[in-house]
Image (cartoon, rainbow, N blue to C red; front, side, top):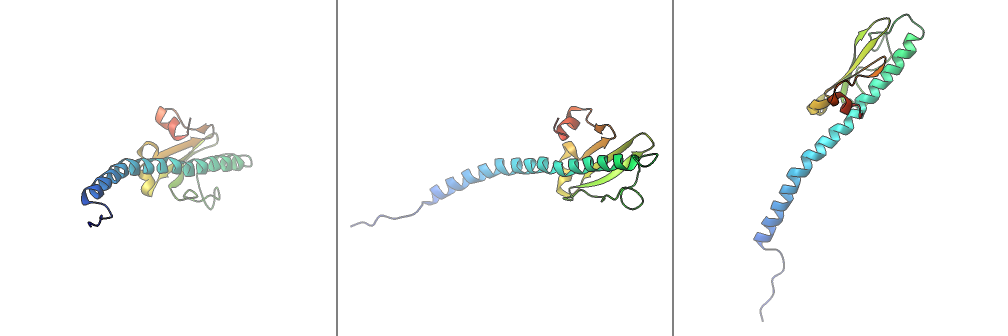
Length: 135
């Protein structure tokens, strides 16, 4: 009597490994891209918080502040999750511009590496900027 062998042949194993490799080659970059898009909310929420803090600051003073931290807004120089560094690039009596610049792995999100807001709201003049703000 001949015993029937159990298990997989080398060809079956190689074919399944090839399929898994192809799926991984497609799925991993898509996952990374979606992850970066999700991390944009870190920068966006920080910019919206800066805008709110600037309006609060301006309500009791003659101009907006150009300083984050001591002497200005008590606001950290990086976003909550650390994906963006924050700065106020311009401020005067009637306007301000705040910017979030991507850092670390988030800097590879070239479409939205720099996101800005001013006293009127999100700066979204181009289609790319509108996509960053989800418009």
